[in-house]
Image (cartoon, rainbow, N blue to C red; front, side, top):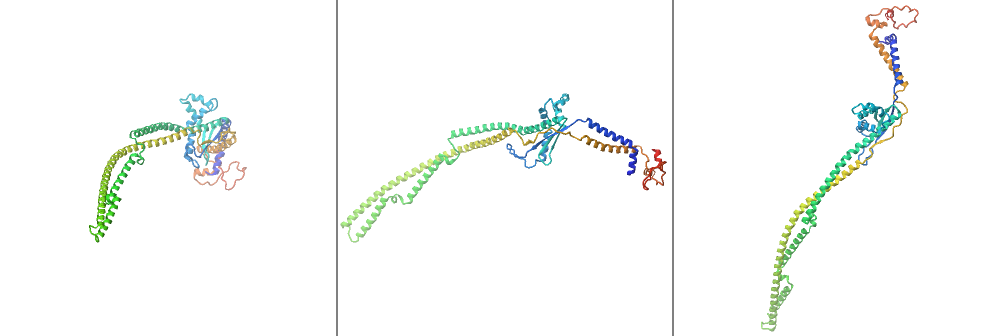
Length: 457
């Protein structure tokens, strides 16, 4: 379809097209005049990224998109809407107008919550951690009041979401602390009872008296055996006596002197007789002294052997006692480990309980309301002039579509191109209309309308 054909159709269907345009403008004007006024108020809320001093967690930089989407869903949840209904005055809008229809519903509170959610709009600010909570109302005060209520209800619900699990955990941890304390007291009681019955205070053998006594007896036996071995290695008791050694040396010197004098003197010589008498006396003294020392040595040796036997018996008895105490000390170690394990478990549970209890007492979250919603000064949506301009553009488009649809329903031959299209034959000439002489001249190449077309139309 050429542009000339389109204008021909519009010229022929100008009445219908004009009617469509006027109806569209009339409808738009009626909507502008009768539409209810609406105002939109917004309350911005910041999702903070600083470290939580209670929970110890932090969101670094920009909050994750999934986290922001979760916060938006929380704002739009029924729980927040029901909290808003509790916060709004019952005698003011929008609760006042919702009470009567809600009374006919099976779940009035849930129905009212869904109704106020229809005018709620929650959007995150671009490239920031701010969530804008907006609500559209019939008056500026209503819009601001409900928007602020949604922002505050969102903060309250976020705090409940944070603290309620912590409260349940705190209660559970309190029960665990009691159970851990009971286990610790039972383990300590068993340990104390065993220590009283066995007389063992510590499981460390180094500080035990019986073990020290066993070591002391072993040291005494070793010293006794070393002393006996040293006495036997020194040549017996005679070599150990200084008096016997001196007498032996005197006898040897006197024997040498007698042998020397016997070469020049006879045995009847008075000097030889004196020397022999002196030598006999020394030998007799040395013999008696050696016998006395030997008897003393034998007594000491027997006493040493007896002492060694006593020490060996004492060591065996002490070993038996130490082994028994070692077994008891093993039981003491087991009981001590049970006490240590119970103590560690009690400390761990107590620390977790304290942390959960601290979190349950928190009175704020990482959500901060930047400012309260203020009453808007302008209505939402398009102004009257803008509405009429949009209606005019839409009316022109509808008029064009309507004219084309009417033409398709009742096709007419309105130009040379239409005739050529219908007959599929070349057009040799055209006959001007009766008033063609009075009409202005056309351009040589401009198509002309058939005279027959006028009569047909």
